[in-house]
Image (cartoon, rainbow, N blue to C red):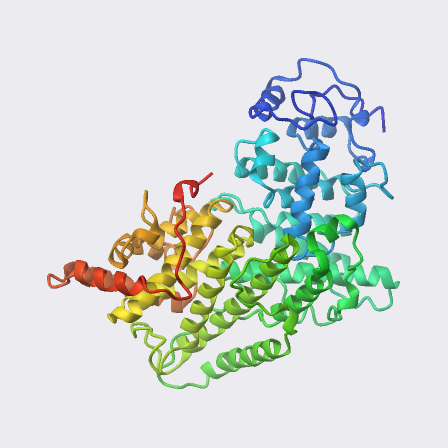
Length: 588
């Protein structure tokens, strides 16, 4: 093995060429890219003396040519210890609570102790996948110090390392590959390419079923049984959340997960090392409880939730009844889940900032659980309303009237949640699925603004502004979010807070929103999101007609209405927003 790895290769530790020194030169990564293209200009010791001792050697099936190619692709490059430590801290805080399958003790001993206390070696594939996932949330200053030009540049580089290792079948253990693929689902490519999160979760589920994760493991040894159950439910929840974000049927069918015992709190290891305790504080057990409740919540997402083979029902027919019955059963199941939710993990807006970072992290995960609930709640009610005899997409929305529907109430609750996270600067840490959720809430608030009532319009304007603010902040992490904020009316070069309602409505890009619907599947709009639900498509179609009427109405007094709404929106209430500097809210 050592003979195979005795390769001449370029340095991986930056310009300093010292193993323990973090790169601090902004263009250091560009230097290594040039070396990758032109070849190294100096010789280093054999590769096996550079690879940290806590990482497993590549599979013995790989030949020298394969290793040469992996070296050329940078797949065997390992981040500096300091950089890897910061990435792993971000992973512990913002990835692990969502899919808690990783052995934190094993990774912590290897990374934070620089391999001096590691108990057993770590898969190179899994290590690179963890580095990619953690880099989504690590502070930008560490990415710049490592030589990356932007977060997108760093994520692309780190993901391609993991992908190259996967493509070469460097790992023989299927359970390790499943864990790595699950982390790779956080990658979203150019929408013109097909290998995005949906692709990787499909590959992950296929291998999980082939390995038998979806079967009952009660006969297996207790530790193995717990791990396999937890890994399966991590795959299951990830599949359901990707389906919610993309409005597509989940890959795992309802009958597939039935044999697997439901996850219990005791199945999760809450006795983690000091490095995890520093991030979680006294909230470790409650974070585990959030994941258990999320599994139950995701079971409310049936595999037929996004079946679009239905039409609005104006005359009751037998054919519509099974569909409505299925939705009502899901609604009852969702109501039961909410009623049984432990009080300790219920999201409550807090007027004060928690004193400890661990409490902020816990608060953000409680908020994410509430966002998942609201998205499922709104999806079920959008479809029930679409199938009802009284369905009217042109009907104005208002919370004041007796006809205030659950779809609008769900959008309002989501906006209250976003306001709380915005004040605590926690929006940056929401997962990518949140982008689609906020977009759909924003569309509801745009429709609400067309009610004609100044009081209703003022409140809906504040709620729409909060959705735009949230998308702009998420745009610093997910490029598509900033683009979607402009579609909802975010003005270029000025703050949404200083704009009048009419100015926002004038900037709403209905044409581009219309192109995001499935009827324009060939659109070149650069976002992975599509608006697939008939309910939302009808709203956008109605907004398109109203905007044309509004533009052609010679009696429309935009300035008077803007003044009225602006005076109303300045009233102090729960949606009053502090001024912010939008100079930072630019695409990376």
